Image (cartoon, rainbow, N blue to C red; front, side):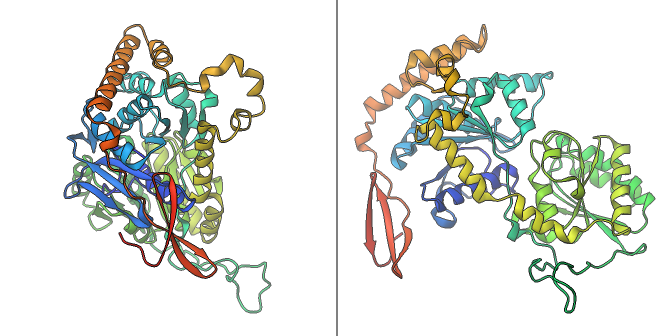
Length: 493
């Protein structure tokens, strides 16, 4: 796994996705390492839960935890890590990650299979989106397969990078539901009252007309997260509903605008700002409220609204991007990304809770059935098998794939330099030639590295010991140089 965005950065959808997917793949018997850039006080190799190994590479960070794109200077250390760890598949995350884009380029030069997961939506008109889309086209011209977190994200990525839709799979994010339980959660199997038939569950506490309703917002305070809409809507919501309070967690450049609005309207006693919170503290913040407000302007999936629903919160969110695909309608009230509509939708949610028409006590068990990281890992593993040839192309792409095989042989990416150059050349009149030049230079650097720093001089890293339970005995299976060795007794780290 390779991306600029990973812990200890405050957790977002990309960071938690990489971590949870990696741990579940390790549970399924795979070896997984993560490559990201250094953070303050964290450089070098670190081990996380379950033997997940993280390389924090010292690189210059320029904006929002993204490293400065250099195209080639990352190659020597990337090659060293890949050879040391005997990597077979490189899986990049996030289209704005320099490490991801450069890692996929280098991996293809080294003859490795590659997968890319897109977590974001981008437009087509503004200068930043045009440049980003051209960069994505460069990255995905030679990738083996692409994963998107929603169907809207897939449509967006296919258009931005001019991809064959068959090369793009949709695998959503998920949540660890056990970590996002409501404050007073009782499993439905035991959620019964003596003397009441089993099919009639206990009624949750009622919300009276004078009870305080707390609205929770947990978000990075950036423009694309709808912070400006939030700033405009809060005074109007509080003016219309006297027994309503806000709890806002998150940090970003828009925090100062939010604080100025509170001072201007004298709302400090009704709005509590917590600043940045760690991911393990998110549940404790969410269970303080009854409504979760998500005014985002663009969102490919929106993991945080799944976490909120799992905590038993009624969700008010904008109808943008992949958000309408995430939760069923009885858990959400949708609004247009406009100030007036957000105020109206929040008012509807408050009225629904006060009338006790919404059974939020059932949300957790429903979310638990809908989203699972184990399922995400299984579907991602199937993608890995498909690009490595462990399953047939007909089975991987569908029963109609065999009929179109001859016309679509390019879906099986060749590592030959001439074939790679053909794919890059079609990226544009000028961009195609520039991309081809980058690929040729990358290949020449690889040849020089193979001559001056031969693979034989690179030590092979020892894999993390895995516990095996057999006949009541605990044994350790250690994979080294492609061979499994089993040693009895304790492990040495």
